Length: 187
Image 1 (cartoon, rainbow, N blue to C red):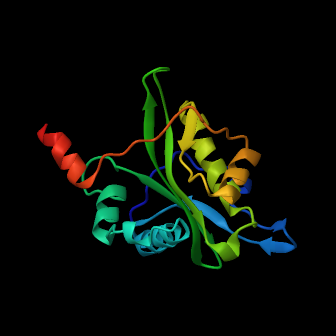
Image 2 (tube, rainbow, N blue to C red):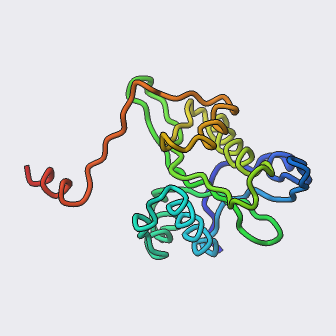
């Protein structure tokens, strides 16, 4: 079984939420690096996230693409993943890759996706996933953890702000893909 490397292990109290009590519920979970065997669950959660974000048709990634990106036979992974496991089921995930700031000359993490199944929200899993990524940054001397969130996703925005995140309101994200990418490549 291949494991994605996310840095040295953290103390047990940071890798598990056992037991965590929020909203009157007791939750028992573990945060661990994803393995190749988790690819079907990662794709399931990515599709659930796309559904939540009102764009289910956009989630077209295949198991082969995820396996090649996360667990390549040669070379470094393109991306990394953490999973949250509760009662032997993957119930949450964080997919990320390394970023770099030309202004500061320092590396960081770009969090591509953070998702916790709706029935597991409020149990501390999202906090544990985000916290583990912050630990990876600190352990490696990286100085930032960044991500994008849809403007209308108020619950997520409030969650992130309550953890010390701040919105970069002066920045707008741009993307070139599909035919526009082809045209730009030919220009």
